[in-house]
Image 1: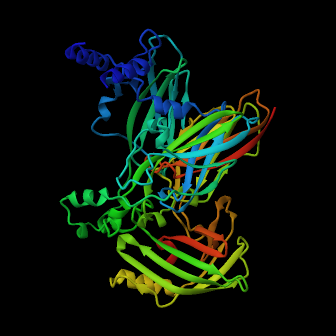
Image 2 (image 1 turned 90 degrees about the vertical axis):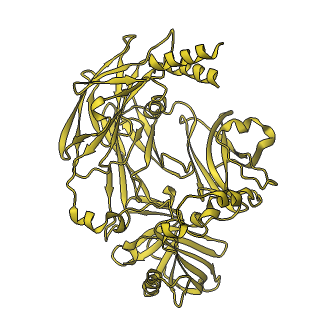
Image 3 (image 1 turned 30 degrees about the horizontal axis):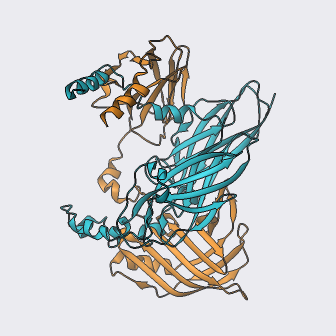
Amino acid sequence: MKHLWIAIALLTGCNLGGNTPPKFQTINGEEVKYLFGFAYVPSTIFSPLVVQPNSQWNISLEVSDANGDDVEILFPEAPGQINFNQETKQGYWNIPDDIVDNYPTLQILAVDDKGASDILIYPLEIAQEWDSGMWDTGMWDTGDWRNDRMLDGSDLVGEFSIDENDNRIQGTMEFLAPNRRCKITWAETKGSSLNPCELCTHSWSITIERGSVESTQPYCLEQQQQLESVVWNVGWSDRVEWNGLVYNSPLLYEHSTAGWVPFGQATVQQGHFSFQMDLDTYLID
Amino acid sequence: MNIGIKHCLIGIIFLTGCFRGIFSDRPKYLATEYVVNKPRIVALRSSPVEMVSGTPSTLDALLIAPKDATIEGWQVSACGLDLSSTTRTWIWDLLCFEKDDAITPLFSTPSLPYQFAVPTFPEIDSCNQWNDNMDTGLAISDTGWIEEGYYESECAHQLPIMVKAIVDGEPVFAAGFTNWYPNLPYHLRRDTTYSDAGIELNIPSQAKAGTEVSLALSIATNATYASFQWYIDAGVLLDTGITKAHQFQEATESFPHPLTTSNNRLVIPEEYEGTLRIWVVVHEPWYHDFDMTWAQGEIEVTP
């Protein structure tokens, strides 16, 4: 194993007897240090550099190459579009007002013309005015933070068979909100056929009543009441272009303000219609 | 060799900075290897994103290749899937595919996407024991995060899938790791994947050779943590071959989906003429190897 590590180091890191990677010297006048071969900027070890939104942040680099190769500077996965002059090794980033990530990590990649490279990680903080009102109410409770890949949010799932004579559907719908420990089932649900919406191949109108609730907590009972007050006009198409966006096999839903909108995934296969609708609070409020 | 000397050598390697370059290799590859000059499989996706015993799954891949290349067929296989074993199997590398008897062919097809039946495999015995022994120090019912059924969801094999395409008689490979569940886990029927979201590649339909054009990929979901990988037939991408989300817009009354956009800038070569293809792959940087989506567009380049 140790031999393997040494071999890797020799083959990819050292390039002994061959080409040596470029090396960062300074960034914005501050010396770049190296520890065990990793480049770092001393002033950003314990806190990121704070930059202002809606301003221009200038970048000036000095990079050396032991072999005298030309060195190209790249900014992979940058938080915005960095304008950089490869000749002068100077550039800038026009920081917008509404940046996606207020704590971006800038990767600065130096690549010489033989392919050897070095990377400098430069943490930034975009200065922001804290909304104390939001903070005081408990930011995590507002529902602003949501991760679809965890047991968060809620879904409506439907499984129906399609009557081949009149195109009506019959089956089951479920509301699933696992993080709230709420599951509501509407067995023997029926839907009538609608004239297909403009985007739809098929459309149906579904009314749900008297769901079976596997919880007595207020949230679940409120959801049941809310969901049962809605007439669910839904549809399906193999492929849809909506507002320039392409959707494959979407569930289409007649939204109260936006009209027919792709809102989840659906399939129609062999007389069977199934769907999964990602219910954010915006939809059902 | 004396152990002390070995340690000394390793120390010298560290101290002299020989490791410089090792950790920049991946960013360098993603940032610079974006021109399509040979066949490559650059994205995989499955629906659902993980495998469930005995259920249908649809697998798709994005193969980019020079314009005159012909894809002759696809072969997809898994490794480490023992259809009689009740022991949890976790495989972390692709060396498994060097053992012929450990490979399970899943399907062969002339084209993708392709729906296949995941082989049926038994319940995993060892998971229950692992859970029983686990003591987090937290009362599960108090956390608000762990629910009944969560542990069962965790009980899965982790196995690699190898995708092989034959392009002009030569094999092209890609692989990804995913969970293999004996039963449909609670989370899987409700995961929202990137391929569920609407996607748009906004590029000009025509451009002059030698000019710079703006590219934008929008996806109608929260993809603020996603990576966007760009591939082109020719030219230079000023924002490199890998970008992050640059704009995020919350859902509104008229557009009830969040919208995430990533931008890039393409400098078209002076001598280029004809159709210039562009691909963008969206995926999470960690985990969920098969949660990817992509879009393709073309620019007609004139002198």
